[in-house]
Length: 162
Image (cartoon, rainbow, N blue to C red; front, side, top):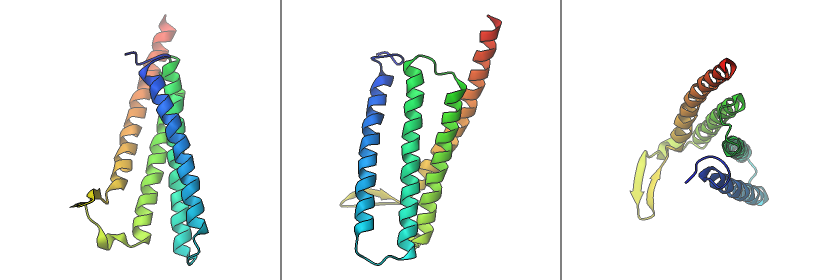
C-alpha cells in the first residue's frame, strides 16, 4: 500500500478525519443545545464547565483541521515544509489547552475526592487520567515538530546545493 499520494493510506486517513470532524461538530452542537436548554440552576459553575467544554471542543477541532492540512501535504508528496512544522506546534499547543481544560474542570468540580487512577467494574475499565494523554501527546508532538523543523532546514540546504 502506498503511504503518499492519491489512493494511499494518507488519503484514507484524510477521509476518516473528515468524518470525525463532521461527527465532532454534530456532537458539539447536540451537547451544547442539550446543556444550555436544560432548565436547571444556572450557576457560575455550569457556565465555567460549559466554557471549558467549548474551549476543549474547539481545540480538538483545530487539531483535526491541522492534521488534515498535514495529510494534504503528504498527498501532494511534499511533507517537508515549514508550514507543517507550524501546524505540529499548533497541535501541541491545542493539546496543552485541552490538558488545562481537563485539570481546571477537575479542580472546579472537586473531583479529586473521587479520583481513581484506574477502576474496573461491570461496565469496564475507567480512568481519571485523560489529561495525561493530552499532556504527553503535546510534549511528544512538540519534540516531533522540532525534529521536523531540523529536517526541513536540512532539505532546504540540500535543495540549495543542487
